[in-house]
Image 1: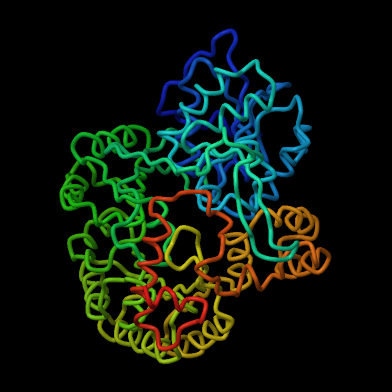
Image 2 (image 1 turned 120 degrees about the horizontal axis):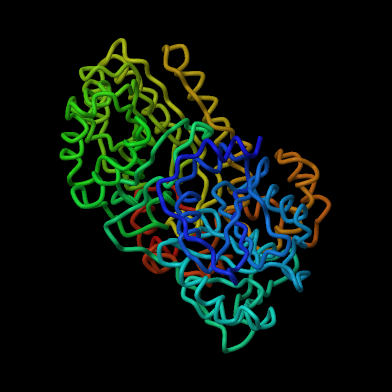
Length: 548
């Protein structure tokens, strides 16, 4: 099976021939091949590492792997989904590597990167020797170059040297002190003055963004070639990790970068995916549409990520229809103007309705809107306004299949809403929307509330969760398993409610306080203050933000 999986790959990069003393490196994705090879981030990192002649790179997935070295010096993981930590621990064990960094001696240096670890690495900190915080374009070569300088040194010397590289985080070199075993964090500080006090996320600022380095029929999205059109999002919705953590908003140059990248991919496939948090906000997006509408591209199937509401024109809809796309996805969050002001979502119901009208006029058969329940500051009438908006959309574009996907608000590190907890009424609010919308013929698809609780736990967790994660790994990844593990560890870490539901004080030391994202805490608090001006009731923990 392994041979057939890798034989189906069509590579779009040239790998280097490893030199005689090349570093044996395993680059792993902690999930099945079909999932991992569909990750653009994994593809690009693999190609970047493989382009170095001083590395001998082998890939590892949970179901297949290339020929692996018996004594790897470096083992890397790309982590894009929180619960994949279970597979990371399993892969470490399968390679004979202790799951905790403190127990490793002669073993490979274990590093990790990806959006999960860049946002808040602390729940997983004890499992990694090194974490790369930020963009691989900046970090990967710096990491390997620094390792080469201390390749033959002892492990502590290696880790201390790597910790001097901007964006490289070595968790074992930072001590966390708690007010009590089950209390809040008192301070986080380096173990001595030679270690940087803060680690800054590294940001790539070029205008040539990522594109697929491999196309294969074995991918979850079969034979798709992916191109990153934009990175980050200029809207800055206050809950949104994809915007705040990846600032500033960057675009690929259409003529010099984007179109040449697309043409490279279309030599091997006719399926194109345009990626980005806000693809249609590329300032030259019309030029890209014109390119796709050329006769030579008539057979190309185009998939597009979520689009901005007021950019859904009839031309866009017609272009997508002509390229075998039948629906589009728009994040609207709510039908309430007040709630959209709170979260900084700059759109109106009229724009949402017009987007649906344009989608239908352009030949699309379906539109999926994304909403959210339990947003900070949300009141019962905000939900009623969402129901009313959905009815208006259905009325304005009859015959268009209408879906509302709805998630529960989950606090994310490095965003203005990181201090809020999950709304305890969120599950009931999802049920309310379902009860109101389904009889209207609107397809309502709520995301799992229980998964949102686990996600909040991991997104606001600290290092004490590592023991909890080990326990739940054996119990299964259900909410009940996490509750059981909390019960077993009572007195050794805070209750689940502390991480998931509590609103945190602005003076509280956050688990990621020593990790600098794109914006400083003071700026995030300012954005928070603007949001809560629209609240009808304010949690006492955030009174300072209201006054600042």
